[in-house]
Length: 399
Image (cartoon, rainbow, N blue to C red):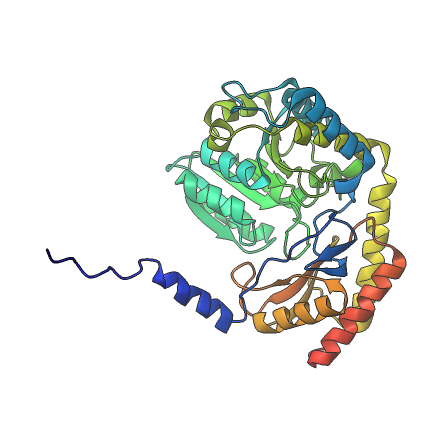
């Protein structure tokens, strides 16, 4: 009996793709954290000043969050055991949703397993193929994916360009249902959306207004309530999305809005319907984090004090930080290969600042993405600036 010759490896194209990443200077291996996610942390066996974490307020290690998580495990177990719509809705989940809604000044809220799921699940649930999405060109990938899943038509307006958005709204007046969507704070550039202008345009043209506040919750607004509070736009934004995994310090995402919106998402948002709910420890730690935001506003004050100090130091060194207005501060260097070399050299000398290149950012706009936290000390930040300056001079790319 003759046997057929072995088939070629059907995944061989992945080898070629990885080789291309290496050739383009974009191949990265995962840095492994040994210990706590802290302002100085041990990655790959090396103690480094950590400028790559989203742990804005240092809540990942806050005693109140630790204690709440441990208590929840002891009392309620390690997991919830089901999806929310069957047997996995615990009182902790309902309490967390009530607390988030109250914190954000909305009627109701729903918690998702991640911020990505919150964005993608919401956009895909509320829109269909007859509808239209108007999206900022630098919106987060989860917004883009949700827009594609919805099958709605998509029109992209130039970054933060309210006038261009206004023209698109005028041109598409015949479309029955339109969604205007933008990040509140943009995750790679650290700039803030012109929400007053955008929200006013959405109201004027009868469009749904949606804001992803992932990087502004815990950072902007009273006690970290986000960009809607920062601009005093309560009641003027239909859908607010946020995350529980950045400044909140734990895990998950949420959507805030009207009671009817949340009830609809309970029934139609696929990530909510088909994913097991948060373990008790996660929900309890998130509740504790909201308490800390209310009780310790000085953490946000320290975050901004550190941010100003660090930005001023980068400016003195001649770095290009783009249009950043928040603790997200890119150090723009141009080509991806340069950014990765810069990042690696800084890491060897004691600073972890991740290099970012295409497709996360546009070609020619590669950078080190830095985030200062409330828990960094002034001496730490000054040392980080010294290391970054020395590293970039060693590469010969500082102006």
